[in-house]
Amino acid sequence: MIYVIANSVLKPGMKEEFLKIFKANVPNVLAEDGCIFYNPCTDVDMGSGINEDSVTIVECWESPEHLKAHLAAPHMKKFIEDVRDMRVSSSLSVVTPA
Image (cartoon, rainbow, N blue to C red; front, top):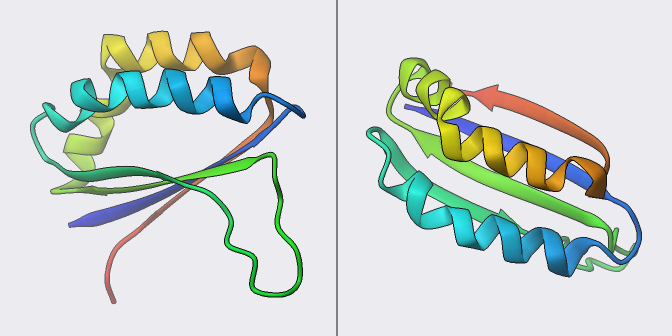
């Protein structure tokens, strides 16, 4: 099992539209072989402020091969294209329980 933490820092005012596009794609992702969960998350204010323009996607996949298939899926290529101009930056971490 692997976990993915993918962060997108968005241009100001783009978070609502980004989440709309993201959530429309969630059923496609959940239907993929090997997808355990796939959730968008936003910052929680723990007293030091939050980044209003950040969305973190937390994912769990059965294997690296399932994740590779997910990243190559046509609906993911379309999603990436649809949100490309909304992002300032993005990062991806793939981890496994120790």
